[in-house]
Length: 104
Image (tube, rainbow, N blue to C red):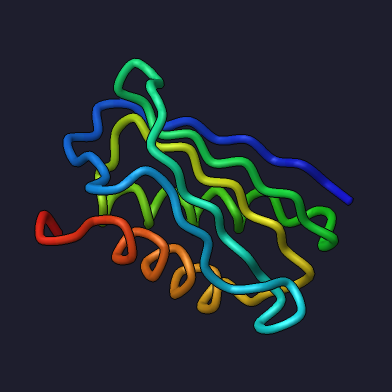
């Protein structure tokens, strides 16, 4: 297992609700927990993955995600068992859409 942590600053969108989880590790190999929390405007992403050595790919996927959504005061926890980057992007977008409400 490998744990990766990323933090992004200067987001300008907040979540409409407190928390949600999408996906499960046994279906699509990925689950995402997203929660609203005071991070001084930052967005933190923690990834626990069984696929060791793919930090650069994870960084690219979550940087692209942050560029799309520009979240602030959000923590995202990802449990991965080998999902492809496309599945990761899909699950991240689903997680945000589930908690954005009418503000998306």
